[in-house]
Length: 395
Length: 192
Image 1 (cartoon, chains in turn cyan, orange):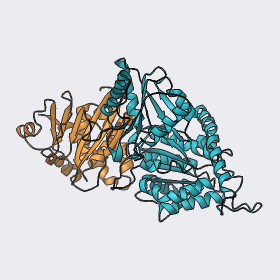
Image 2 (cartoon, chains in turn yellow, green; image 1 turned 45 degrees about the vertical axis):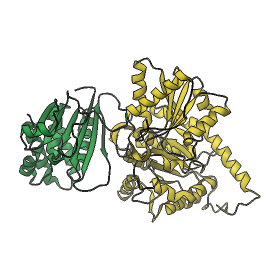
Image 3 (spheres, chains in turn cyan, green; image 1 turned 180 degrees about the horizontal axis):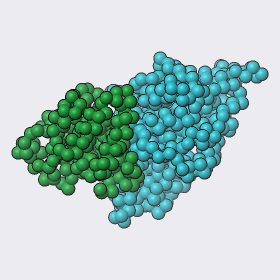
Image 4 (spheres, rainbow over the protein chains, first blue to last red; image 1 turned 90 degrees about the vertical axis):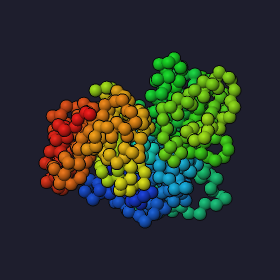
């Protein structure tokens, strides 16, 4: 049995990092970062971890230090949020293209501007094509569990890609909720020791990391990254199966909630999925066949699996907590509709941009989306697929 | 206790409403409940109106939004009564608990005909008598526990004693005063 606790999402993530006990944590310790490096630095000061904590002067340096440490052969972690991630952007690509399995805790908050500190997914969506594995978490429990699974996925020899664990800023990062922690020893055994195959401090095999990579090789290296991302799918499921044996908690690419016999469904990520589950239950009591698909693994995008899971529906709403400002729907929406088209699944699908800059998403908002979906099914017609939820002056 | 109790706190920055909501979450957690405790963050300024929330449930809590139809509202500072719509969405089957010495007529007027129960407590006097300083959150915490009946008095006091021991390891001299504040508040909170 695990340990019954109550923690904020930030505390839970810091404790996961403590139990993982990485060799190096490099982080910018104040805003726009989170409380996670602050909690972790106290573990370092109190001798609870063996980690070298590098308090850097910027997020760009935080990622650079993680890259240096990981390339040297160490297990490195960091944590950030919003504009902190923006400032890392250049190095985010260096990390993934150098195939360094760095793990990051990302507390999702709006990227300025105008200045906003609250939750949305614009930070994560800004790096969605950077070659990182991206896991999303409904609550503190999932943020913790995803971190515990992270290194096993990222460091697998068929993968070797960095990984970020996302959770909603404030909504779960600063909310105290119940959680079941895993015993320290079990985590240690589960995560295991890091044995990189190639690393800079190996004097028996001198190598270079990050040299020039021009016309002769970059195409092959990018192809290898693409293959690694596809390989990650199997590894993610294998690690989840082991995790389930240890904890009883089941994870996959996504969670299907009352989806099997559903007519209409919402697709979303992070904390909104919890609110949606409550709404699904209340609609079911009224005889409305509503369901939910909560995406956990956004990169790699489980295209075939999602298309299959949604194939029996009559209408779908995809909720994006960041606007791609492309006049053609949010990032999750475009990925999902592309996945359905490629897999010959044709279901009317709406895009909703919602929850921007911390705008609260209520049960009523979610209910209104299901009402819209019922309307689509009834009329067999979509007036406007690109919609906004909870914005004043609309509807 | 209902399966799910939702509580909204109104206070001013610096009065400890957020801390009180987290302590309430702690106390309920220790009696085996599922809990949420979260403030509505904004620019952090002393004296600015702030809101904090609690959900306390016998089953896992999945909803992640603010609370719009609370069972209970706690008002830590009565100067908010004329500027914040504190009874917005408050269930008539619930109650509002106010730190005030104002009379019933005034309260009924500013609460715009709220038909549920109204409780008051003089948290300022209790705090000054027991702590020598104005920390209204400790008495208000006891008041909401009493009114909402989340747990019984003895269980609550026992649990808070161990919380305070943990929270005030560096200043143990304030533990007794805080415990006394809780005890007085449990006795003094009254329905008007």
